[in-house]
Length: 309
Length: 314
Image: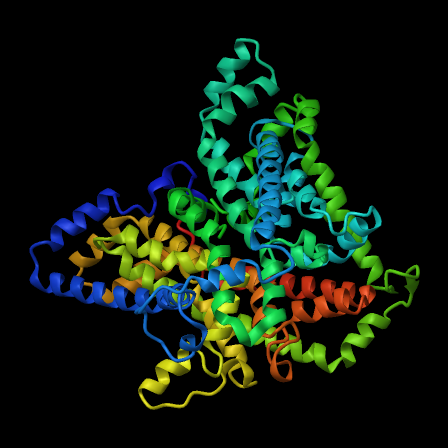
């Protein structure tokens, strides 16, 4: 067994929370040593420096979006003399549609993808984690392999398929694959989670006469809310950021999602209006940032246990 | 437990699944296939079907308008003589072979600093992780394009100390470097996996080492690295597979055309141009299969090499 394989979903829930007994103990030992305290200070200094450098470009973008255009190319600092909201109003209406139109398009795709992933991945996961059936091992292996399959191998025929059924410039090519559980990462995540739920609970329900649909809906699903939350959050962020799929399938400006709209923005006015380009970039990042703020706990857990990013 | 870990157990030994399977042979077949129906449909229609079709198309000339015309190995022969494709391979390999180790090294160092009972861990973790979430977005690629532009943030800062920087992304020598830097910037997600792995190392090993008088450096080489090697391996495999498929950053930063003298023409970007720019679907399919073979080979080499450096604490 590898270390990885002994990381069960349930027990690593606070794998990186800093509250394990070992932490407390080592902190206790350190507390009295002066050299350790200096070491701690050096560490904080390094971390603040590295963190500052990492976050600086993002902060600078926020500040630049509130500056007049000519200042963006002269001012590396973060101070603002007065707030310039015109970048936001200009940017909002710079394309054929107001930017809100693209946000709504993105929201539709995101919502459809979330529903699709939640329903189909949880069903598949229940089968893999709890049911015995012929071909299980082979199918499970295939499912794991599809996690690592580069999507370029399927994108050309998928495009041909969807264009032949007339789905180019609709949201279907972006949503239907999710309804069919093609994000195998989440199937795997949920299998792991269900394996951590005591089997006695299903047995009890079965003795009470419940069939598989009922066990799935009444016993397993309510208990796997954390896994469903992780799936929701990651699906949100990935779909919101998805550029390649949208670039290929959505060529009509009416149907643009936020990333393709931003790209059209770059092409249409490139060097002249960095301010409003940044303003709309901030607007496009805002939903991801909010999801990050509220879903951090699940995000960290999801990464620590399965390596999804 | 990771997908990669699970796969390697499946190949290494007979899992308990088989025994259970035999015991309960066929008991839940019907219910199972009902639950698996969406996934099975997706496997057939979205994954395996298209894979087979893409394999077929790679032996054809197809522009979406006329029916595919069988040309045998022509596409693959063409790839041999396609200088732009060779260049795109060089660019992609440089990106993967420089970017991935660099990113993982930074992730590991920061994870080690964060690991030892430090106050404010959740705060630092959030700061370091945020770029991972935003890094794949068009917005951040746009930001990068400005930061490394001729009058961009980097050169503004350099000007303050009297250095006149190059036009990073308009200079073929530095354009790829700035995209690699963007990749390194997103070290947060492997860092979190490293942190989780560090927590799993039993503290008694370190205590025993301390009793024996081992230095911090010795503890790192003799305990931390070997115990962490499965996690390093996992991150390595995952990041290599992911990096070969990078697209958004190169597309936006290079304005969709591969940048100055094709210096940021990633393999995926060239594939996109062939397939969806020129509708040379047969060639694009051949390229896609070539990419699959490359990624497969890298992953296989990784797995074989892992026998020599990944330590399993059985």
